[in-house]
Amino acid sequence: MSTPQRIERLVLLMDLLLDTRRSLSAQEIRAEIRGYPDNDASFKRQFERDKDELREMGVPLIVEEVPGADPPVLGYRIRKDDYELRDPGLEVDELEALNLAAAVVGFSGGLGRRAMFKLGGGASPVAQRAELADDPNLFTAFAAVVARQPVAFRYHEVDRVVDPHRLQFARGRWYLHGLDHHRGDRRWYRMGRIQGTVQLSGERGAFEAPQQGGSELRLDPWALSSDAQPVVARVWFDPVAAVGVRDDLRDAVVVSDDDRGMVVELVVHNRDGFRSWVLSYLDRAEVLGPADLRAEMISWLEGLARGGGR
Amino acid sequence: MATRIQRLLALLQWVASHADGVEVSEACERFAMTETELVRELEMATMIGDGSAEFDDMPFLVIIEGSRVEASLLSFRRPLRITEPEGLVLLASARALIDDETDPDGPLARALAKLADHLGVAIGTSMDVDLDHDGGETGRTLAAAVEARRRVRFTYWSYGRDSVEQRLVEPWQLLNHDGEWYLSGLDVDKEGARRFRLDRIDGLEVTDDPATSPVPKDHSIALGEDAPHVVLDLGPSASWVVEAYPVQSFEPVGERLRVKLAVTGASWLERILLRLGSDAEVVEIDPRVGELDIVARAAERVLARYR
Image 1 (cartoon, chains in turn blue, cyan):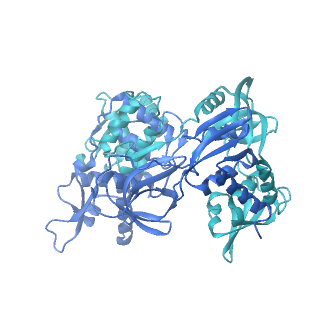
Image 2 (tube, chains in turn green, purple):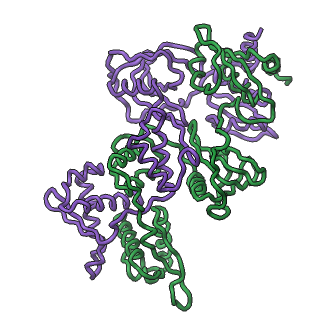
Image 3 (tube, chains in turn brown, red):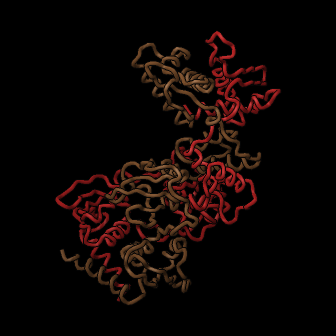
């Protein structure tokens, strides 16, 4: 079946189901709409595909028993009030601004454009400049945040149930923040590290959205949480490394910054992450203090210089 | 398919909202379609339901007359609701462009607020997007140079080889990958296509010299096939290397994982090895990169700082 024929069939199917007062069985639909195959098995297959396509577009398809049918049979309809966009009340300039934003920052898959068509926007006015990474679980997680519905997923080999509070995109990745039911605390999860799929688990509106954002998402390797006591470290970078480091520092304190290099102080929560980060600058960085942190670095390097005991 | 149907419905709704119809050229511009495409879509629309005996089974009535088109809709007068995924995409796109300098009463901020309200989302509380959408000052300067076709000069820290050099580049395009901004372009002195990470560019200067090299259609710059290789044995806690770097092959060897990596430069490899410590062991190394004791030598060089 060609694309125009399939489009015609889908448009007629939507039209029929929007217009009907009671739900229609698959056989009634087949009789009304041309373009379905005569063969029962292929009709069934194609009808399933059409239903999937409608759902993907956002058509709220109601599946219920056809009233009065004996024996009982499943039927389909679309309630007009559910189908139609409630007017978000966008002014012309707001619509244009949104249209531009959807063009500049894109996702793969054309979802943003499709949404703009629904809102009354046109084609992309400009080329895309930046892409927000896609994630297979992103939309389920977002739906769960909006509906305040708990989700279940596997993370670091542990099955978890989480009240999803917040989704955040940072440094090219999506993160989910929520209350872990078993551990009883709020944590950040990197979406890409979730094993398998996120499942909705529980009722909509099952929890109250927290008033505060909870702990801030910290991605700096030295700031990742661990059980160790935080310590203020002092690090020197040569002028070349300093160019790149400056953008990364956030709340670190710059002690000095001149042609001899840059000295910064930062709060280290995670010693492994800190060591890894400093070593990525090779001999363009040096841990100045405190003495025990500096000694740890020297001992790590000495272990490797001697061949790591191997 | 879904996008094409939504575009068709949007087109028909927009045409139908003008009682006297619209110019075909105007519709083409708004929906970025050629006249042939537009007429093809509209003709398809007029065919929908025309096999039926009942006139009112046809959802749309479309008349193309000369350079004008008119439409009236018997169904689909209102657009379809926005799905949650679509809503997320729009919110994220709009949020990504709003920063401290955005006018809080401007059209984008107002649109975001209305849309968030429409979808029942609290921006900043239940979702947030922190995207450096233009690469900052360096990104904006380079974008202007790309546009004006000017050569640029800058100091570049080549991370893979850990060397600092002056570069003269004909800029082609800025691109964002995994949250980092890159410039692709022709390195004039090295006579080849290169990619530069924006946060390693210093002392950027746009010259008055025109960029004359043609911008290639596909300027993705990949590691060459002949890039040197290294084979490492990784302990269990180092297995993240497999997902973080361009691994060419890997196989388990007892408790450990043997991986083959393409190496972009000796310094790049030194960093990985210093960070992994005793979790990694060099099994094989291309002599162009170094010797089997590459990590010991690197550790001694860094240690020299501390002595």
